[in-house]
Amino acid sequence: MRYISTRGQAPALSFEEVVLTGMASDGGLYVPEHVPELSQDELAAMAGLSYAEIAFRVMKPFVNGEIDDETFRGIVKEAYATFSHDAVVPLNQLDANHFLLELFHGPTLAFKDVALQLLGRILDHFLKKRGERAVIMGATSGDTGSAAIEGCRHCDNLDIFILHPHNRVSEVQRRQMTTVLADNVFNVAIEGNFDDAQAMVKASFADQDFLNGTRLVAVNSINWARIMAQIVYYVASAVALGAPQRKVSFCVPSANFGNVFAGYMAYRMGLPVERFVIATNANDILHRTLAANDFSKKELVATLAPSMDIVVSSNFERLLFEAYDRDGKAVDALLERFQAEPTALAEAPLSRLRERFASHSVDDSTILEVIREAHHRTQEILDPHTATGYRAAERERGDESVPMITLATAHPAKFAEAVVKAGFPGVPLPPHMDDLLEREERYTVLPAELSAVQRFVAENRR
Ligand SMILES: *Cc1c(COP(=O)(O)O)cnc(C)c1O
Image (cartoon, rainbow, N blue to C red; front, side):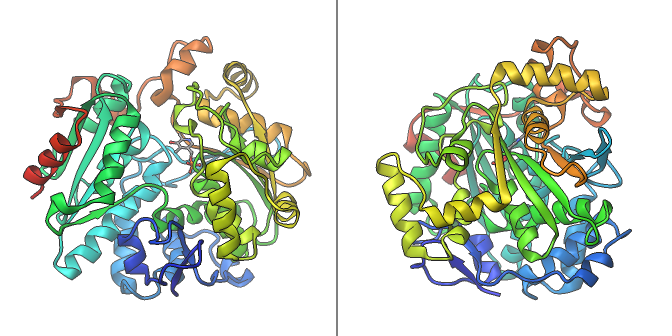
């Protein structure tokens, strides 16, 4: 198995290389050269297996023997032992045929743990084998930073530096990062906004001289291993509801499109999926593109579902590559145009997408209404991201005899602001986190200056 770029120009890479590389050198994203097949028999044989064993079987063809089976099984087992529910990602039945897939039982209470618990361990494995160390740098407005820190805190060969805007993330989100006191974890509060932090990380990737040759690794959702890890829960939940004999549909609260693209990969591998419903908040580029063929940037709106606040969905490029029949030149031309001006997809690829994908956009006042309505009907308190999914699933349900699985991407305690605005007293943090507000914190405040940040990274990496 080799990995190729969606722009068709960069060299093909092995699994090990693709995990250690972020964006392809031609500006594209890496995807597998062939989609491996899961036969009906292989799917049927997964019924009743543990999540870790299903994960091993689904991911094995992508890893391509570059980690031996016994070691990879161990890595997968360890990654998912950090989840607080024995099922790892339990299904919760809401009504006759609508299910929530609870992806928030990991260390930081959001679905990004599923991928990052695994990615940190895979990176550490390859670095150890090569006798190398690496530095991870990332900027966060909340969610990704803590999941990346939790995924790397036990990795001997990695140092992680996460930049967040000083005094501009919620207390729970800040403490989820700053109370991890491991020697290889460095939290930097930037005296600026998220865009300042993001720009400094981008500049550091563009010119890595300040690290004197040490590798800089990205753990954002363009890293193929994150997509790979997310394919697993589509397969596991569908099998639990009767696949391959029975079809299912999925509804996915979406932003950068990594999550729903993983679902599409599961479908391409052979999972019988009737449709994918893409839920967005007011930042609705995905919905506008699918519903109205309006593929254009719109100004960022700050919403009650902040982890879905994006202007551009970076992983949508991976789906475009498939829709354009893997024509890297056509994808490159489309995305160059998109960067410059509002544009549209060609007819054939758009109708191909519409065969399998539906979409719905949910604004803030509707999010609050949905949290109340879902509680009234099901007794569940949904987090605001999951609420967009709940509404989109109801509106774009399709064939009612097909089970609908809505992905619950965060625990409601993590986004208490929306829950309180919806009229509830709030949701307690789960037991393993109930002393979060008393734990010791450690972070360094730095000015929004690239040289100061790079000096801090260079001096503190081990
Ligand atoms: C990151 C995130 C999303 C969006 O996922 P994508 O893979 O970027 O589409 C949705 N909900 C929550 C809670 C998230 O943290």
